[in-house]
Length: 395
Image 1 (cartoon, helix red, strand yellow):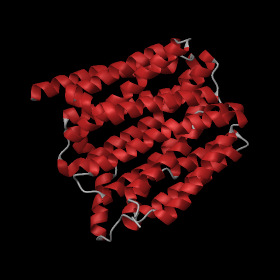
Image 2 (cartoon, one colour; image 1 turned 180 degrees about the vertical axis):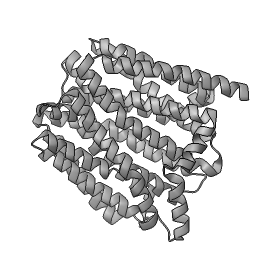
Image 3 (tube, one colour; image 1 turned 180 degrees about the horizontal axis):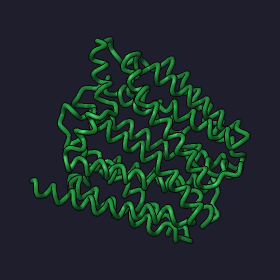
Image 4 (cartoon, helix red, strand yellow; image 1 turned 90 degrees about the horizontal axis):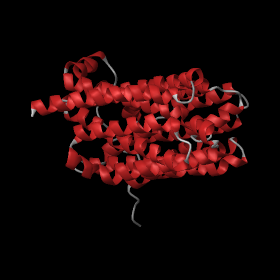
């Protein structure tokens, strides 16, 4: 009997995990509002998840080097099942907060799955293997929010209970089907890898000593900040302007997932070859700026879909282009450290962005997160143009 490839198993593991995560997305703001949460509190709830992930993801990554990927993935899935069930059982805003913090603490699946793929692939087919994570991520965000939206009329807790069941089944399947990828290696090798990957002053100094690299990392931080600002308040915006609930927002998140999957799964390679990463990053940022500037003033479905398309496509081309530029301008022996710095700044942006978006939404009105995000993106466009000009002068 032919043995199932571990790549197929890890793809299904990540896909099911992201379906469960995506099911909660369209429900969370309305569930929190049910217990009296303001937009700022909802933003803090998203911030609490990202902050715990920021603290614990490097720890789980280093631990997976020492004990193996399989135990960490299984632990993460079990933690996800518990947090989702806790979310559904919550009877207060405090319960919702604690469940999201617990979920963030054990959100180790994606980085550990990436490390798993690095273990079982060669350098020649590693990019293709890593593409499976992106595909699982995109597909999970296509099916998850739509399922969550469909289940929401039966109660805000129902999608989280179904998602918890999926996570638990995923955990049991991984226990029996997922082989360990980490071979026995010297402790010194694992420690060296851990030191390269974590945030430290030496890596920060290297990253910021190169002017172009510094510009690209700042761009990545600001882009993530603006996008996280939008993610947190999007459902509240559609509720105020279009009277949409969890079901309609589930469909909208699915629409975003489909656009992202089409762009990143099929068009990105063609666009990079045609325009190059630098110009493509600028084009994506301009599209994002257009989407942010128009979104708060929509009153019809077609205009909403057009604004969302500009944001989804813009982010879908800008984010990977900037990541690629960071990698291309980093010395080969510093890739892990500098990319770790970049991801740390991205995590920090996901901590700050939701809190800012929720606060200005409450204090200054529905349009304020998008106008302030638009100002940040306008600065990003200017910075990206400057970086492109420096790149051209270096060629």
